[in-house]
Length: 175
Image (cartoon, rainbow, N blue to C red; front, side, top):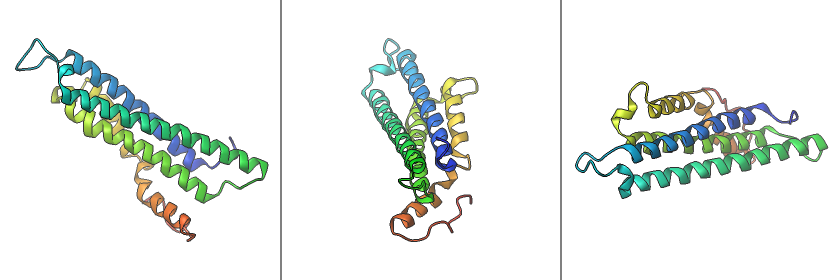
């Protein structure tokens, strides 16, 4: 493990945190749906409405996909470390860039569904201070504004250039 490159590893850590936060937000969303009575029909809850069921289902599908990408990419990272130690293949900057971009993409998937679906459709009362959904959103927004997430565009350019056989190290990762 110590034969790997740090940048992609750090992006994997950030992705794991945001994916876990997205799972927590999905659990909170399900709780909100089950407890929140409808304004027009207080005997029923949002959990009974198809649109909210769909929002939750789509969110879970995206979060599970992000987690699967995270786990598989972590396996690729460990394999790159193993090959580096055995002398089969060095753990190059190009490999590091590719792995970092996949981790980042998984994190972006989790952020997108947390803020674009779960937080947005939970209801404004859950955006107040002290509400779990507000906390998950705030924590996720902190991830999204972290310098690691701002590396998405330069990492994508690097991966594209690496694939084309062009030099990529001249592209700065930190804007």
